[in-house]
Length: 233
Image 1 (cartoon, helix red, strand yellow):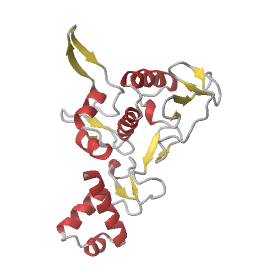
Image 2 (cartoon, one colour):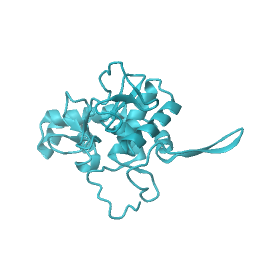
Image 3 (tube, one colour):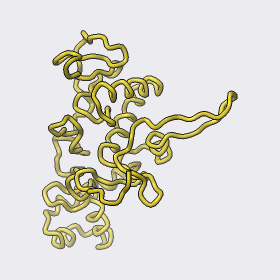
Image 4 (cartoon, helix red, strand yellow):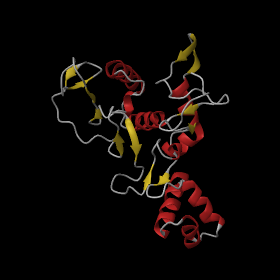
């Protein structure tokens, strides 16, 4: 895939360092997941394949990620945090990608977990409305608890379309590939939180001045500053 002629609007564009800043996953780990890597054991040299196919080709020789890639990173990290093994995540991801016909199986509304089992709402012919664990293709009889993708909104095709990083109860900040190429922004005004936070520092932490510049409520400026500080932490 050639970067020339790509319309980044609706895809979003993130460097590995920016993806790391937004997800909290180390940059080196993201590169390994998205691009694969080579390693050596006592039996020789081996290759670990990428976990998924990135939305974008390398740009100027560097790994570039789209919004769906960003969500894949976030969900995979969450699964690892729930003590689901790396080998199992790879096996299930491969199965879900095949069944759901998508390169981004973990950033779809069809993905669900109860903390141990991983399920997919499978389309026909696998069974209408059936909850199936892709690893074994057995019907799941236990109740599914709230998916931990609760701060995402999904598009008509079932893929992740919007991320509310402060949660759906606080929609003041949004990450939306349709707006500002996926940079975190103040929802009501579309101003990137990083821009507001930088202006706040440049003006001696005077939120009133920044609010006047951008015609925003002071509370929106302070929300952007708090969000950026949380990312930095």
